[in-house]
Image: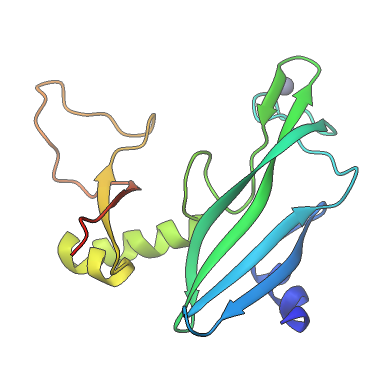
Length: 167
Ligand SMILES: [Zn+2]
């Protein structure tokens, strides 16, 4: 699997200091896990003012659902760095593959939206996951609800997950 690292780093458009540390493959679970990391001493931009060269304060592990690789479910895992900005203090750095707070990669979200545009939510949910129900919710800033409180019929712009009742 390690031979795939340069290929997947290119596909994921990873740039320094990010790299693929490990790839694991579980044929029984039909799943590929890609573990990303950043090199020691790597710096990031402040998410508020874009000042570059901010040092890493600490990090927490996070996982993102990525698009399938052929029939295999794919997940990215990485320690998410919190950086120390001289002007703004400590904040979580942005990563190039996902929006802040999302459990999905940008490519996965784009794929989901393309399915939704041509299919009902029920069909789309089934395609996306057999074990979870995908509930649609508006993102925090880019979509406003009508003032009369009515729900909109325009396509939702983000996904959030809730566990399906066990069956
Ligand atoms: Zn800043």
